[in-house]
Amino acid sequence: MKFTLSDAEKLLKEYTTNDFLLKHAYSVKSAMESYSEIFGGDREKWGITGLLHDFDYEKYPEEHPFKGAEILRDMGVDEEIVNAILSHASHTNVPRETDMAKALFAVDELTGLILAVSFVMPDKSIKSVKVKSVKKKLKDKAFARKVNREEIYLGVEELGVDLTDHIERVLNAMKGIAHIIDG
Image 1 (cartoon, rainbow, N blue to C red):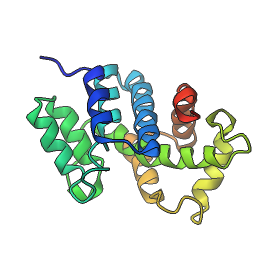
Image 2 (image 1 turned 90 degrees about the horizontal axis):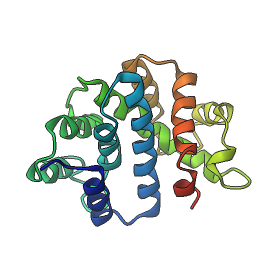
Image 3 (image 1 turned 45 degrees about the horizontal axis):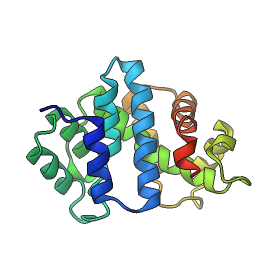
């Protein structure tokens, strides 16, 4: 039986209740779907990967993403998805060998930064965020301190994309789900 996006959403909501983590999951999903078009990947598969990359974090923060990988494997989820999820966390030492894995790593921290930028906009809307604002906040290490800026730069390098283009692609993907992010 094929593991679908609907299955992934059910699993995400079973393990994750934190509003920010849910917004982050949907943001990464949207960015991954956008990148699937560039790399010729399966949109649903890339979306599932983005949606579930942190699904275990709220319940198993110390075991993340190993616990999530175990759960997904037990469910028979495609090993490419599992490996991409494992490789998005540097501490796992799982190499990022596929475009999907590299894209997940590249968009993960950036979506967190973009969400943080949206929260400080006067209208608190993702729609008001500009690439220039994100680049400015990327340089400001006092802003959103938990965002790992080195991983953003490394992700861009590994994916082989321009930083400005990357920010624009991810931001536009997130603006496409403003009803989720701003809600």
